[in-house]
Image (tube, rainbow, N blue to C red):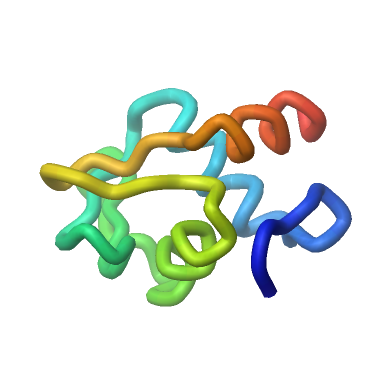
Length: 78
């Protein structure tokens, strides 16, 4: 899909962005696989990878962070 915009993001992806903005998300690896929110495993195993591939989040050291593009999409969704 490449760089996503708000129209392309479903509710689940927007929820992942919100959780990231609130620092509630951890990941098992740097590819965005296996997301945990508040210590609970997230059911969509592809959500993190989708958002990494779209350039909206980055993953490092078990943390997922919004990129500048992710912050602008998140701000537009609020």
